[in-house]
Image (tube, rainbow, N blue to C red; front, side, top):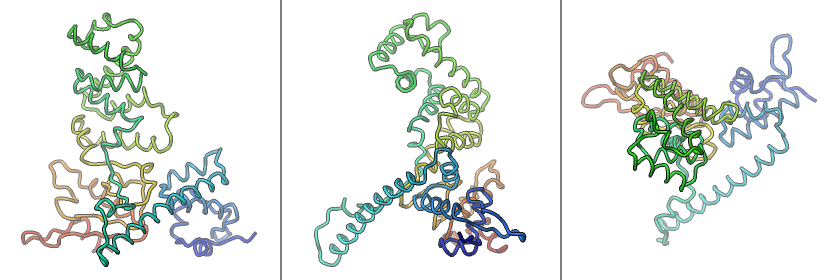
Length: 364
């Protein structure tokens, strides 16, 4: 079979030479061989692998996850193609729904046809980087619940969730425990409280107490990232997590490290500064993300809203300006084809454009 140079393959596949170079650098698509002048050459196996990569990219998989999928020992190309077909059929249905919405809207605007308000948005997907949803989805609910229980050990709602999800307790069993605790005015974290607990429930409660005490030490030392690692080590074994959940875990720990040691601040930031992992972005639509949430992702078009001083970089005491600069660069490099950076040029008679952006313009 003919071998293709990087330029020939780029033209054949409709992608850029730079993209193929990048795929080589990250070991996603290596050339079959190189000439004596170090030019890349690609054969049939590489062409088929590139087809898989482009199919997964069309379905919005991040490059790291594509590599993990293709390199898995049990990867089956034919099965993968069948899955691609199914996903594309679903996408086709969504597009047909969107076209119907457009036709109905045109008819309403031009002919005065009736259209209920709910129909205005049929087929138009918008996806938010929702940190709250992230923490309320299994298996990571245990992290939020354990952290919140550490802040309020008397919160029986959280205790109920933990025993139900992680120990398999049913409602009646949990209700009996809570009634016992209330009647005797005790906490399961008290020194002698377990002596009043029926024998068949002590092991589960001892397990919960041990995790609680372990993370309490980390939180008392203002180390929420260590507390999260301890929770994950106990409840979320690395080997049991799929690639997308391992990415979530790593990002959670990273965000906790940036929370200045305050667990309440961390939980608040997870709500105010939403995070969306790659596994939740396998659908079309407009994605509203923070700079952190965009790490490792790519989009055809990227808008960086409000690239203005005091917003990016953030104007706050103790801010790490180099980290702000790095995050701004991360956001810029998420764009595959087009980058838009809107900003107010003058605000209250003073220049307003972000220094990061203006400096970059002068250098480029």
